[in-house]
Length: 201
Ligand code: MN3
Image (cartoon, rainbow, N blue to C red):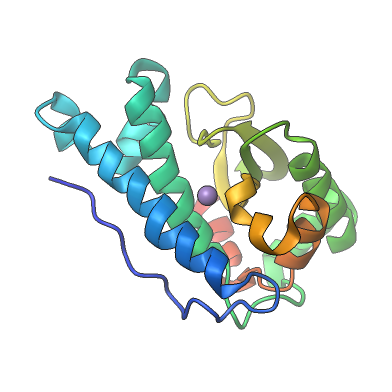
């Protein structure tokens, strides 16, 4: 069965001024659509046609580069849109807040370490907050890889991720990736991150 692109869960301009409308349009309608289309082309007529996206991603090391890159691209972007919200930002609560404090000392400690991971990822990739052995960790991956992949350096269940490809921020932030990373925390969907954290534990 072919994969399809879901609409954004909010309006294109809903994350302004932190992420601009034009970037959201191009990022979702062009980039994400292209990953979906190219994934469908790469699996057509192969046994991978009958696998779920999670199954494909977890087998990244044994599938073709086209399926790994475009399958990862589809998984990561769908996850990213849900990770953000126009009603986001602020501070997390409950068990997630406790886990953040125990892993990073404070929310500020998490943000600093996460932004460092995103800023130092050379070229294109992603920064991740993930659950590994019941605890929160931070990692980054190249290209469209993610922590679910068998090839990931740090494997675990992602609960939050930020796209640090230039197409995610260049129109508004140009070369200032660090400014984009700072701004993203104003629209992080903590409710969704908490829900994922509870499911991953
Ligand atoms: Mn992207």
